Amino acid sequence: MTGSLVKLAAAAAVVCVGLFGLNVLNVPPGSGVVWAGIPDRVEAIDTFMFRLTIGVRDKDGAGVSKPAGGQFTFYLSERYGFRMDIRGGETTVSWYVPPAADTLTMVIPAEKRWSRTPLSPEQRGKMPEEYEDPAAYIKRFLARPYKKLGRSVLDGVEVEGIEVTDPPTKDGTLANGLGRMWVDVKTELPVRIELEGPADGKTAHWLMQFRWAAAVDPNIPGDYTPLAP
Image (cartoon, rainbow, N blue to C red; front, side, top):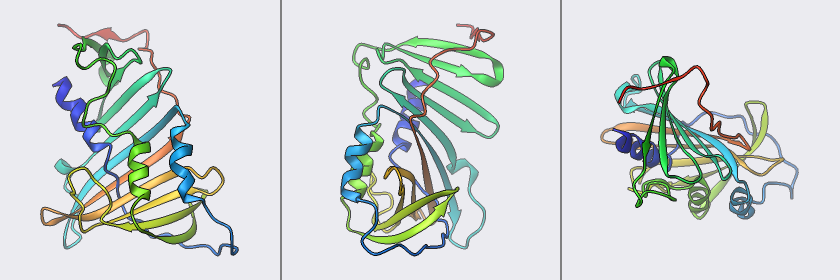
């Protein structure tokens, strides 16, 4: 179970979505985000968080299919390690791997319980193969031909956007889809990536939201107790 959930969230980390209508702002000529420099800025950051929300909608616009959806929150830090929160309904389960990557800790906040499992020598010191670092995905996204969308305000932050067709995914799921990246014009760091496209006769949506310098908490609260073996 541990391995399957880690692989599920790791694989999901390379996909992102949800197209939202945004009002474009006027931008003075000659100003704008330097898109080619974004991958280097991202790679220079050693602590960040990103949240991935997945949903599927019928072609006629009917409601989202709950079994195909989900929300995954990832915290990555060179100092503290990797944490993944999987939310399903009202339940959240957290998985934590320290920098040494020799154990996997599962925490269930609603039950105040936890368990720890040793990782095999083959798994130590690296993340699952299905996992793709967001910096690598951002670089692949920016390598696609894109058109500029201008500026807008997103959650109170002034952003600038681009749009690509056939956004990159490992399995080519959204071969006929659209992808949008929105970048904070002050920091020139991504704040949101959105993908939308056809999948198995439905419309799939992925939304990835970024927070830079958001550290993972490596500690288990003192009032939590171990799960029974």
